[in-house]
Image (tube, rainbow, N blue to C red; front, top):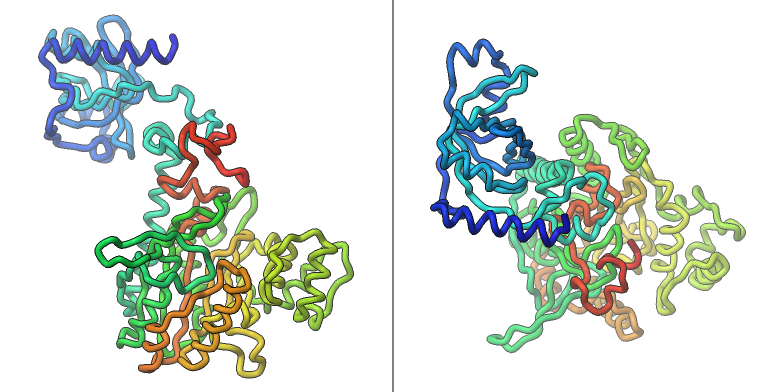
Length: 510
């Protein structure tokens, strides 16, 4: 049967149900048990126990299987968490109820009343006495969803993915646990959860290209935030020594298995601390989350085992020398601080970069290729070049290095942290340097934020701050390789729109 025929048949069944007096979309349905509650309450009881004390129940859910046997039918109903078998027998229900059963399709939402029993094979079942249609499913569900390779359909029609694929639902349940554990961790340590603006006059707190909009009433341009950092540090100035925000950020950049235009981060700030304190805190936080979410400190990811009991800390420059595997001659530490030498190495290795990049950004490109793929277990890479860390304090013994670290797990950057620069004079000078970089063509360079400099002028205590990518952490703890697997509604090209390129709406980098 063609799908169009199947849809037409479902529509005819809906019309018949209406003619016969059924309301296919009632306002509500009162039930005594969810399907999950039925399973939990009655699964321990034997056939004899259910016969001795008959239990009459009322439940509801989506019909996910229906097998007709003449004047009887078996089916399964789910509430999204559990499923239970139902049995409809013509001589046990009214003629009207049996007639409604004959108008049902897999995917319909139903309510039913009946008695609990066990079949000859021992399966817990509801013997249906009354039946209600709660919503007609007019589009057929995929018959073999687990074998489906059309990732676009899964991402674009997430509602179908969640209906038909229990593994998809488990991913998002696990993601919810990650966020709950984060809140619990910081609440237990006297952090206060706050909210900061998503629309900002100046897109600051990170190096990224923003989305632009315009506020008509105020007559001013606004940007969707690329990070909440500068507002959170204003709160530290204002007397909140420990703050955190689970925030939605927006960056007008490419899409890949690691990047989505909007994404979720945890960002937190702890006064009277430096980046070394956050190294300890990060290890404690992420080890706890991994264990509570997966039940173990050894986590399976894409055929490998990540050991959250094995953490390592390596200076950035040392990591490049340690993992050097390019065909060119191994550089020295001096080479890694020389922009001309770095460009020569990148050119000889075929590693692309943008012309206006400074030494720190060039070093970052080299690090991405040479080091990142080797960082399976949690690894803290620290002491980044100061020229790519405009909001960070520098090392007292080497002002060319920032007190900054990034955390990598499974080769994925998960966190970025540093000792916050709190000298307003130095911060203004750093912003001025960023403006020069922007004028030279760097679209991701930071703008000047006069109000933030003014806030620092009131005095911000020594502070350390960190951002953790929740989407990427969820990827690791759910064993998924694409960020779109852990975002309920990821961005795709318009259906059938220009630029789709015949790739199903997914970006070319997929």
